[in-house]
Amino acid sequence: MELVSSTKFILKTHKSIAIETSKGASLSKLFEKHSRLCFGFATFIGQRVTKGMFVPCDEDGNFLKEPIVESDWWKKIGEKEKSEYRDRYEEAKGRVLFEGNWEYSRLLKRVKNKDTTDEYNFKGATPLFTIESLANKNGKYLNPLLLTKSALKQIGYVS
Image (tube, rainbow, N blue to C red):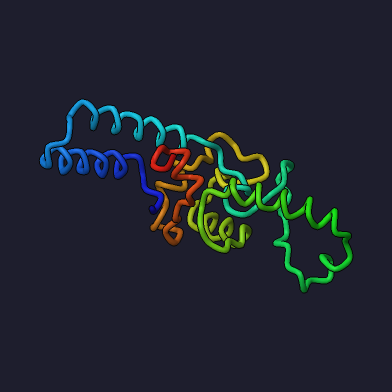
């Protein structure tokens, strides 16, 4: 699923309710589902953007390199360290919300070139720089951002 603005999300879920209602689905259950999804989406897009939403990062926001067996740095560490690193990397990868092989700095430059505000300073991740601000610019200044299974789970699409 592509990241969309809250308006598009609400219209899309409303349309799906109309379709399901015409097929005989319970209106009260559909309303409950719609409310849950809208609340989940509102909570999701209100989050401040972090590097870890695009690429695997540790708890301090440092990029984690993909554990590639052929790389020099990987060959230099022991088996215990490799196992621990793989676990940390996979956990961090599970927190990534947007699909794709992101070059975070390239994304930042692309957004900054279209908007001169300081809203896109990732270091502080100001409250103004939320997923919603990305959604409102999605497709205009950025290629469409696709949501991962982790993002869909936060919204309520996947259990």
